[in-house]
Length: 327
Ligand code: UDP
Image (cartoon, rainbow, N blue to C red; front, side, top):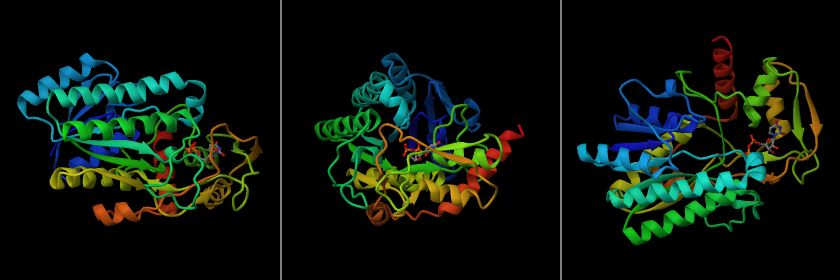
């Protein structure tokens, strides 16, 4: 396959690029490097600096590349994804996450590119009505991040229907860990996600961390999430792209583990390596109590088998953080 990876220098996008290369596909990356890192793009992969919200940037890539050989699949990772930030900056989220997707689809249709793989999120479910979220459950997001992704999901479905295209929409649960090469991982100055923050606290990079609320209706009062290793997630994208291309049909799938862990359970797991100092603080705005995926459909349809459990994910994040702290 020839695949355009939009956002391919970012955390999840770069892992998808690594998995595509390992499976011998031709990869072109577009990224505006707002959160991405150019050093994450492997040698030999063609890179275009460009912004998904700028039509001329998208057009240039499609015109240049499709004249050589059309893309079989476009993968979209170029999204803003921080729940608390989305609460204070909803317009930025709608602009980047919805307008960016609209432009991408417009340029795809102009160039007759038929297959799109889209990163969506468990946040579309809002406060789930069932313990395990299934793909046809009701979607009522409780933050602008989830709302922006749901708006894009719907747009993709209508556009694919009108232009006889195929989509593979993945609803990610909580992604963590790093590639086994340790060349790429979640590398940011202002981390907000639980696992890297807990690992940094264990490594002494932070003095302490805050647990955002312990009065939720969960096993120990702290929020429950479903954690998935980034390489398992990335591998699902290769399978998903092949699936829609070969079967000429669309799919919408959760990517998670069927297991939920509370914030305190994550702290306990990381504490096996070193002490984690924490304090309980107030709830964080926009946080649902519990989000756990049913991953039956992804396993059945794609034959996807996640290889890493929670302890592997934490070990992987720990190894990556140790490596980059020595750089
Ligand atoms: N969390 C926390 N302390 C932190 C970071 C996160 O208690 O320093 C909690 C957060 O409130 C949520 C869970 O950990 O309940 C997962 O948050 P994260 O930001 O990692 O992912 P999200 O589920 O928001 O996408």
